[in-house]
Image: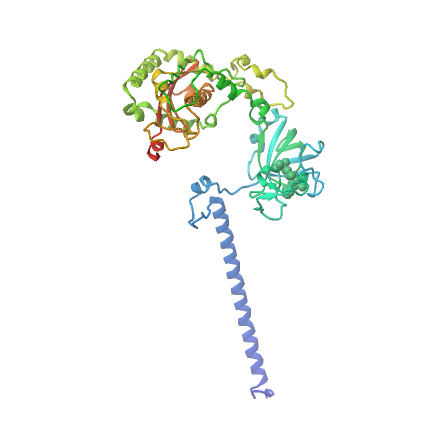
Length: 451
Ligand SMILES: C[S@@+](CC[C@H](N)C(=O)[O-])C[C@H]1O[C@@H](n2cnc3c(N)ncnc32)[C@H](O)[C@@H]1O
């Protein structure tokens, strides 16, 4: 006979049995809860991974956007391509700029998860002496949104963050010009750095003085203008404007030969698409005025006669061992403290002569300059950025003389017509042997509609 509980008079052994049953139930419930929490966490992690992989983001209106929109809106998920191993482990004492401490050394190994075969991604980079390193100030502690900062050199005085190289900036991105000592396998050996150990690197780009240093870039614009110096000053009055754009007499003489556009890097397949979309027969035939159309017929005749010549030109162009002489580019003889890949200064085509047909000149003269602050009452098209027809001429010359066509378009596409838009003008031109001729300059349709 079991003793009785003094509170409820129930037998103690029965109470113990019930307690142990309840304990078992509680244990079961705990296990169930744990496993459901684990499953939930796993689910959340895989969902987050999927979301970040897709690059989904929330826009201002909290509407989820597609991955493509995310890129277009500038919301990308960054993945470090590698992490800096440097001689500085703390922010304190790390040089404030790379020039401060020459022997400051670092290594950067490209992550396998980014490029399976990092050597492929680094091919050719060893021809450069310096590289830009784009990195994250990962040890900032927080993302700053202060518009004014106190750079050490200003002794407590505040200036706008964008006038400084402060690490504390909205996107916490750093930019350092480092010396590239050597590349071995998947690793870059750097010196002249100002990054702490463990810094995540987002990108590497070669330093090319012709593009990156104002000392090397000056002269281009000046010369473009000089080449058109006898053009009329920017003015809305075109009655006295005679653009007289004789391509031969005003050929832009550049002191740099490689001023190619982003188009150059286009994939040939996408270029083939563009080529088809741009074909005259597809979209332009109907809108071209009679005289331009007849000029195009001449172009077609030339193309047909010249077909054999074009084919031989194609093979010339595609032969990498026969770059044109660099004597077209007088400034290339200068000495530089930076070394760059030789192909940068050996563009596959020399500077093209740029001509304008009388029709194109006339059409361009119709455009009003951008700096007219009062909205124009006239029906004439108006530039948004360009300060008049002569600046437009310089810009168009700049674009065309460097031959903006992709390799596919230059060497394999039979359609020599080329379309591009500059400011509020749609430009139609064609390319011949050593020259580009502008055939038509018309206001972009939607810009006209906006006015
Ligand atoms: C003034 S910033 C300039 C960096 C770069 N040259 C630029 O202009 O973007 C250099 C300083 O940033 C700090 N720093 C370097 N790496 C960092 C990192 N990964 N996270 C946070 N701060 C860093 C160090 O204190 C270093 O002195």
